[in-house]
Image (cartoon, rainbow, N blue to C red; front, side, top):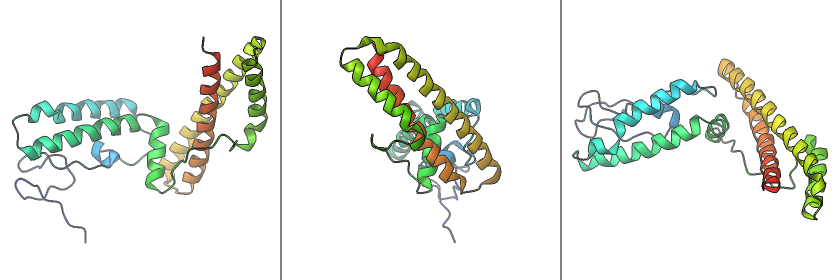
Amino acid sequence: MTDIAHCWHCGNPAAESLFCKFCNSLQQPTPDYYQFFGLPRRLSLDPDDLQKRFYSLSRQLHPDLFSRATPTDRQYSLEATAILNDAYRVLRDPVARAEYVLKEQGLEVSQQKPKDVPPELLEEVFELNMLLEELRGGDSSVGPQLEAAHRKFVTLRQEADAELERLFQQYDRTADPKLFTDIRGLLIRRRYIENLIQQVEKELAP
């Protein structure tokens, strides 16, 4: 049987709320981003709803409101504000949100090494490396080809984002944990594409 959390101030059951319903004292905030925002654990979230919750919580938790409160209240306010900002940064970004949920499932999206090229991108990566070598060797005529490669990788990233959203919606409908494997694989591929885009943009920058 799970122990029921009690309010540090009045001792009444505090359930899983930021504020005690009996004395309205701020409770120690949960580090769980979804629980903190009062959201169901879904991969697809309404950005407008998330923003409204963020602003509402910001108004309730701002440290200035607790400047004359007890040391415990002030400490919890600081902790809650830090969690609020981190949680909002993660949950509003679909990729970071998915990585957060996967990490909770023990499926962390590890950083790929440059040599770990997704098989379906081998040809594009080989051609890109050749162009970059020529550019670094002083051949500026490859600029248009690099720009074309950049457009292609941006398109691939957009396609990956669309497929991620499709998988998010499928998971939210079915709660099938097997989908986490597909999502993780797609996130790894997207991260590699993102690195290629940044690499090209760095070389093309004035």
